[in-house]
Picture 1 (cartoon, rainbow, N blue to C red):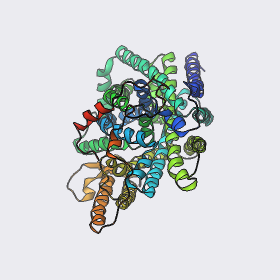
Picture 2: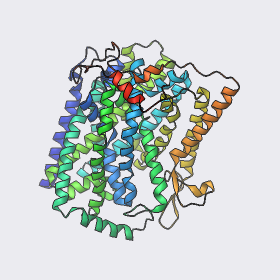
Picture 3: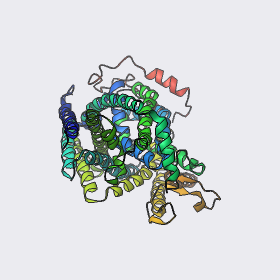
Picture 4: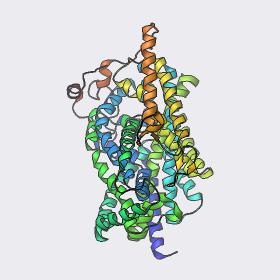
Length: 557
């Protein structure tokens, strides 16, 4: 082993080990009176202010797989890989309107999951349970792909075999088990500090090695001679619709993914969410630069480790950057994988505990019992995801994550439209959800993966774009399967609602009130441990928030 490799591994091990140790002790971070409550363990006491929410949001939503997969797609196919950047930009305005309402109604009723809101809004525990199960099914492969990114980093460093991944997951699991959401939150702060430093180092190194001009020239030559028909420095005209629909569909899906809801509900007031929505495009700068890293890798002649394109990001740091920067980069990417995996496992556990365990198995469960069940389920989620990618082909995990994105999008009518109206009938929403899930999985199953010469490499689950010619249209364009399935979902839900209301079938009782969707921390004597992390609540802002939002939105349902 060379001295350079020893330096990389030493820095990586020291940084990652130190951060995990800090996460293990996060339960002492302004420790509450008790952690034996799901609001404390699962959503941090709903006490995170502007800065803490900012770091947790970045740590949970901009995952290691983002920094691994986006450069890998750009490296392999070019412009299509940049879809993540406009998708992230779209999320800011949506977050401003959707997440504030989600936070308010959950704050008013004590919800820790979106499925609880759905149950209350439409008066159907069956619908709530289906939304919860869909969320869990979509989250599990998402955890797995975070670990795929972690495994790719270990492989680049030179840690072969299964033991490095198992050790990292075990330590992270114990950390989350003890400290709950506080562990990934504290680690997110450190990760973002390292990420800022890493972005500055990337800019400096790129400037010192010829800049992007030579990189784009080399990339253009590579794409021009690539056998793949989709490889191009510029987006092909027939890919515009697919590119746009994927960005829009992914942006909608973000706000119903359980881990995103968990982050939102951990904020202490609406203002923290609005500030973060306004500032969220800053993360897009880092995301865009990492996407360009795929182009830069081509310019520098970097080759993926063992042919695995997922290793292109850590391989760039190993081949081009000084070894001490590479070691820090490895640790940053590794902890960026463990943070969202932790938040996702907490979110999935909260869904099961609140919407399945307490709803159907133990209606009289105490807060301490709820927390205990969620702790063990979060442990099981991470260990199960690790075993999944170790026992099966990691590519299969990525296929399942693709399915998961389509699945979670089908909860939009209940979880997002429900924030504005309760008009849709609960039975119609159930039928629409099942229709969307079935049609989405069927379409994904029917899409083959083809080589450049047209022959089929994989008969099923070969992508997420549905050709419009298969719908009888004379077009070479395609559209994101998730949006097509959502259209089926909405069509069934709206049609059945009209029919059921026409024949007088009663809907469920809406347990929410119009003012619940504008509730704020200063509106009532609502003890949320506001001094836990960021100091006490500021002067009440609820009234100002209502005036501001209602100037944009007239539907107060």
